[in-house]
Image (cartoon, rainbow, N blue to C red; front, side, top):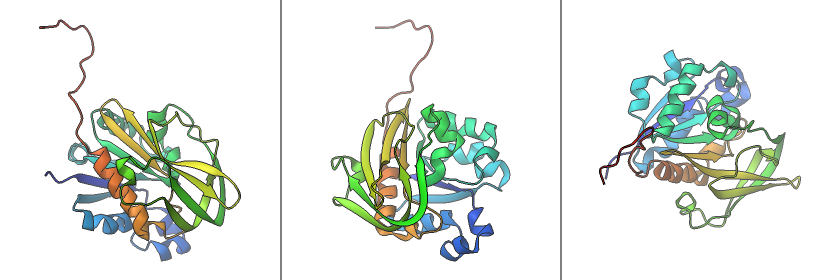
Length: 237
């Protein structure tokens, strides 16, 4: 069985500017996610905003089966040429997992074709992520729900296309619900949006959350068919 090559991209800005976030993620959200994924046997690398080409060079993406994306403060500062590079790789079959506030990233909005806007409330509320598609491989080993003791509220309406598969919905103490685990296909690429992950809560230390990300990596890296042919076509059949 081949080893899945995973690149974890994180702005790595909050952790260096906000002491509260730095106390939770002293080495960065990307490093915490990478450490959590070590037992799953993936080949892991990390990349951050301040690196040349945001760490997402053509060579890095060429050797990435699945890209994980966490962003918040620098969405508009991500270079368009890098976004286009990632976009083309997704269409060509690279998996993409977009976490939490990455819903507003250029790459996710480009792939969705919508504003990807939503309601939010930054409070310390309990969140329950309910599994609504227990047959989906991303839900493997999760049980009926995941409880997150404290999380930022995200609420509907979430301005995205209808997911190809909806794996999780969340409920919050204020009564809001949210489509928190959404799977999409774009040409040969598979995309999973997963909502938990506010930077002021230790969510990426939670084993169930990392299990979902690991499951999503395997799903997003699963085999696909032949590259489609476009344009005038003369059949040999």
